Length: 155
Image (cartoon, helix red, strand yellow):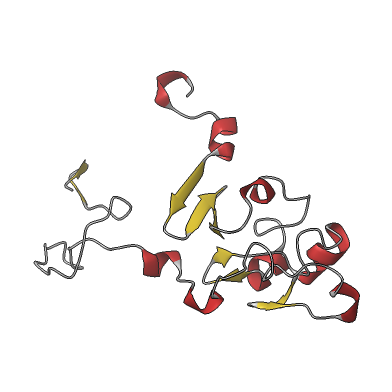
């Protein structure tokens, strides 16, 4: 860690936060099966933060799964899959069938219909909109969604 226990820009860029079946890297959520070395090495203009098609077509519920068909085919030449042509739908064009499907590699055995958004994954605290504590045993506390009052965190 850098001086004063604060991360430098380089350390922040390398930091990965894992939560449930996903991880957060560079302000973007990835499915846990997406290779972290790829998340750290998107080519220029590719990936969920630099390519709108990758972000839209390659993500489900805000969780990035893979590249769009253009990036997968023309930038990565199939080395990172065939590419998505729609949300959750990988390209089946004849010219990409020679490439490995991500559903046969890193997303093998992943049911994409079971992917939850980060909002659906987080357990919210027991406070209602009026900032009153709700005694409901079905609700849990989470360090991600803490309650702050007068500048203090009351776990």
